[in-house]
Length: 200
Image (cartoon, rainbow, N blue to C red; front, top):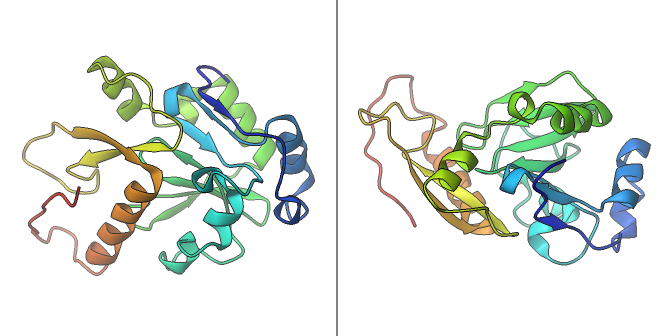
């Protein structure tokens, strides 16, 4: 993978490591999670610190995704995220995508190994790098480890102005903001008008 800005320390959370499929274990032994493409993909690691990098924290912690998103099961393994906080998780050997604004999921119909291969060989096709590229071109540079990009207005909102405001923020703050948005809009009808305000 290119433009790597972070590689996790060696495996320190052996309990979580033992629960992973063999191909993911092999990856973690080589790279215990990493951030690549200037923040375009963050693969979590089996570690106790930092919490923003912890696979266990995202999987079973107090803010685990299954606790918020009705489309996510407790057994779903959220092993990675993109630059704006959308999630990639493993369900029954298949990689799925979670849109964290809407809670919608999509089966990508590849296993973990094929997903990593696709990201490595065809990052522009496997990942949505629009926000990262725009942020870089505007002079923001690369995201620092432990940061995500906030997008305003949210992608799921059809706004009159198609320009997006991009703001870097700590991972936990961004994911909390997305969870709040999801809770507020999940029962709205398509086309229903709402008024937004930034919560950051």
